[in-house]
Amino acid sequence: MFETFKQKLARGERTIAFAISRLNHHNLIQMLGMAGGFDGFWIDAEHAGFSATEIEIAALAGRAVGLDSFVRLAPTDYATVTRCLESGVSGVMAAQIRSAAHAEEFVRWCKFAPRGCRGLNAGGYDGRFGTLPPAEFTARANRENFVAIQIETRGALEECEAIAAIDAVDHLFVGPSDLSQVLGVTGDFLHPDCLAAIDRVAAACQKHGKSWGAVTLSPEHTRMCVEKGCRLVSLTNDVRLVNAGIKAVRQTFADLFGN
Image (tube, rainbow, N blue to C red):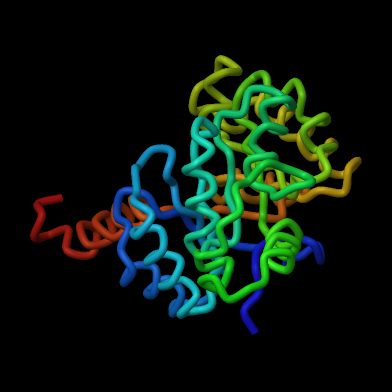
């Protein structure tokens, strides 16, 4: 039975994800699903622009192989948020959140009344293409949509406890690259300041009964996050996979490459 990130995380399960960005293709998503071990993926619409149709196809490809999906996007455009939610992904994740008030604004974009201000249009995938009664659709969407907030700015870190306390925030997600940058230790993901920041996020989530996740960048970094309670582990992305494949080919046939 197909289950979402939200369902699995609510049970306290560890979930394994990959990201899709520069090389968004339905065949790649299906290959990763068929390989096994992944619970789903997130679509990076912050750094790579995707049309609603491209997101719909990616979500459809994922569902075909039992993978859940959500979209990461900049919290700058209400309409883009609602189009993502109508596309067939199970939720959205806000990048570059600056404060608890900023996170609350994003949440309101994601939720129908009375919790939020999302415009009612049941014609997308989440409304079963117009076949769900409006009251049933809005109640189901408010209950089931996954809302994650990235902690990757100094403001979000300073207010991570207040963000975790927001009732409709399901998950906090650490962006280690930007977080290391704002802490003045760019790329040093195991620096004591980065570890202290992760401890702060983990404590906030534990206090308010929320899960947290992170992009992990090495086996050591992954182990550290898991030991601190990370439940959504984002191990790789499309570009990293291709680079790893290129490296493996060059190593396997080193004599032909002159290495």
